Each structure stands twice: as C-alpha cells, then as structure tokens.
Length: 243
Ligand SMILES: Nc1nc2c(ncn2[C@@H]2O[C@H](COP(=O)(O)OP(=O)(O)O)[C@@H](O)[C@H]2O)c(=O)[nH]1
Ligand SMILES: [Mg+2]
Image (cartoon, rainbow, N blue to C red; front, top):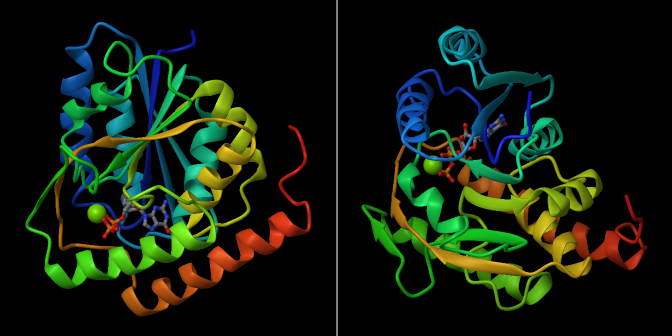
C-alpha cells in the first residue's frame, strides 16, 4: 500500500453496536476528502463478536484493516494500531465518534500546519460539550488536575479519545509506551514532550455517550497509580532510549 496521508486508528472493545455505524460515517467522510486514508481497527477482549463484525465490514471497505490483541486494554490496542499505521498523520479515534468525524480536519494542514501532536480538547476556548452529566465532568477535572501536577503541566484535557500524531513523532514515541490501560494518553504525551515535540490542544465538539467501557472506580484508581508509574519510570531513565 502507498503511504496514505491519514491513518484513523480505532480501539474497539465490545463495540458490536457502535462500530458499524461509526465506520460507515468515517467511510463516507473519507470518500469526500481530497487526501488518501486508511482505517485501522484494533479489537481486544470483546465478548460480543466485535472482531467478526469488523472483519465483515473490511470485506466491503478496502482501506480498512482489522487487528486483534490477546489481552484487554485500550492502551495496548492503540500501541498496536500506531505500529501498524502507515499514514503521514495518525489519528486516534474512539469507536463512539463522540467528536464528529468531520472535525478531524481541524487537526491537519491547512487548518493546523505541520504540528507534532494535536490533541482534541473539551476544555480550551472554542470547545463545546453536549449532554455530559456534571459528575462525569467533575471526575475528569480531578484527574486532569493530577495529570497537570504530576506529568503534563499546562494541558487542560489529555483524556479525550481524538488525537493526531505526525508519523515521525508516532515512531519515536509509541515504542516507548508501557501503559496498557486508559492512562496511556498521559504517558505518550509525556514521552512526546520529553523528546522535544510540541503538543497543542484543539477545541472540539464533544457529544457525551453514556455507554462507556470505563469502569469508574477501578479505572480511576488504576489511572492515578499509572501517573506515579510514569514519574517513576522517567526517574529511572526508562524514557531516555532513542528508537
Ligand atoms: N481495543 C480496546 N479498546 C478499548 C478498550 N477499552 C476501551 N476501548 C475503546 O476505547 C474507546 C473509548 O471508550 P469509551 O467506552 O467510549 O470511553 P469513554 O468515552 O471515556 O466513556 C472506545 O473506542 C472503546 O471501544 C480495550 O480494552 N480494548
Ligand atoms: Mg466514549
């Protein structure tokens, strides 16, 4: 395959319901764009036939590739997708399309010129949130405060599921990623900054989807611990390797 301009990487765990309509929207959107693109789905740990459904869709969507990882974890799936991707820009995209896919162009030239890492943000001026219950927003703000104190000063929203990496940045950062779960974002952004790449926040529209794979208590505790792991690993020189 020739190097596409854009790779859209979708992690999918028990997404039998949400993935097919999202892939259809993405396919339609990409057909209307002047650039070339591929779509990569990485499934792991599903019990609802997500993998078979994604493979069925790949038969009629030639630019879709589907992969599977054995163990569960969004971070694990993202790392695999990033390693498989060929695009000049590599865009992480949640299966629920909480951000309308058309807004992917906000992360790409000519809207944003040659940015290293552009992250979708629900907290910077211009962003809008729809239908999010206040308690979920509040928990997100507590986590972000911890993220800013411990690993990523200045970034207002690191957990949004829509992020774009230039290929050179992805190749330098993702091989060093060690976190498999929901806090992989904080680690890869930390590594990117450490390597001297610039991270910018892009305002997006966010439509909250109450159907969530996040286990609020279990995942929140694990995510807090993960932030300490990032600091500890960095202290021990774990991110100093060049790849
Ligand atoms: N492959 C994979 N994807 C996951 C896993 N956990 C969550 N995801 C995906 O991560 C994305 C965000 O999940 P979602 O439930 O929408 O999280 P929320 O928006 O933060 O409530 C979706 O595309 C999920 O399918 C996992 O263990 N493996
Ligand atoms: Mg979601």
